[in-house]
Length: 415
Image 1 (cartoon, one colour):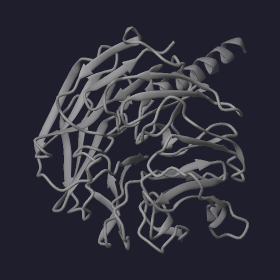
Image 2 (tube, helix red, strand yellow):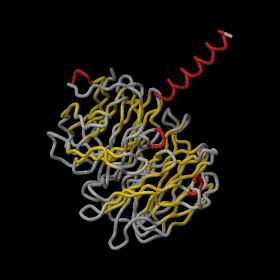
Image 3 (cartoon, one colour):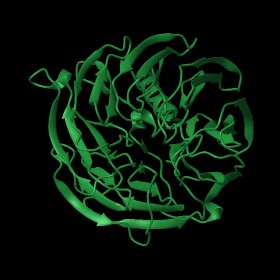
C-alpha cells in the first residue's frame, strides 16, 4: 500500500513539474496567464538569470517548452522573418531559422513579428501574414523545418498579429480579416494539411487569441471573439459552428485585440475602439446554459482594457486597462471589489498581466514592470525599470519570468 502511495505521489509530482516547464502559447495554458512560481516583486540586474541582446525586431511574446524559449522576429522591414530558439537555462542561442517575406503597412505600435509561437511536444508553430500571404511553419524543437503552408493573404492596414494555438492534434489558426474574406483553420499538426476551414463574415481584422471552453461533461469548444460576430464557438475536430452570439457595439467600428478567457462556466471577451467604447462581456456557452442557448450574463463598459487581456485568479478578475487603471471584480457577476491606478507609472500598457503565485505582473510600454498583490485590496508591491520599450506579454516557466523587450530577451530568476 505504501508503495502505491509513493507511485501515485511521484506521478502527481511529475505531472506538476512538467506543467511548470511549459508556456505553450500566448499567455500560457489556455491563455490563463498563471504559474505557481515565486518571482521577486522588483529586482536589479543581479536578479537576471541571463539577458540576450536582440538585434531583430518584434513584439510577439515568448513561448517555453522545457529548456527552450521561442520567439518570432523580423529584419529589414519585414522582408526577413525569423524564428529564434534560446536555451532557457543559459540564454544562449540554440538555432535561428529565416525565410523571405515582404514588407507591408502596419500600425505604428505594431511590428512585423507580433505573433506568439504555439508549441507542443514535437513542434514550434509560427504564423506570418500580409496582403498576399498567410504563411504557417512547423519546425521541430531542434530547428528542422517539418512543413509550411500558405493560407492566402490577410486584409487589414494595421498589420498582422494573430497567434495560433494547439488543440490535441490540430493547429488552430484564426484569420478574421477587414471587410470579410477570412477564415478560421484547423491544420494537422504533423503534416500541415487543412483539416477544416470555416469562412468568416468578419468586418474587422482581429488580433484576439482563441481559448478552449470545456463543459462539466467534458465537451470542448473553441471560442473566438470578433467585433461584428461577437463570440463564436466551433467544434475543435470538425470546425462545425456550435453557436454564435453578437454582443459588441455596432454604431462604430471596433476591434477585438484582448483575448477571451474562461472563468468557470463563463467565457469573458473584450472589444472596443481606442478612443470610444470598450466592452467586457461575460457569456455562458450553450453547452452549460439552462436554455440550451448561449447567453449574455453581465457586462462592464467603464475603464475597460482594449489591448491587455483580463486575468482571472480564484475569485478575482483583474481588468488592467491600457491607461494603468486596474479594476478588480468578481467573475461570477461583475461586481467591483476595488479600482485603482498604478502608482509611479504614467504610461500605456500593451502587455497583458500574468500571475506568479500570489503576485501579478504587467509591463508598461516604456519597460516599467509593475507588481501588485492578488488581493481584495489594492497593494502595489514594486516597480522595476527595464529602460527598454516593451509591447509583449511575459512568460512564466521553469520557475522563472521571461520578458521580451525591443532590445532584449530577459530571464528573471525565481525565488
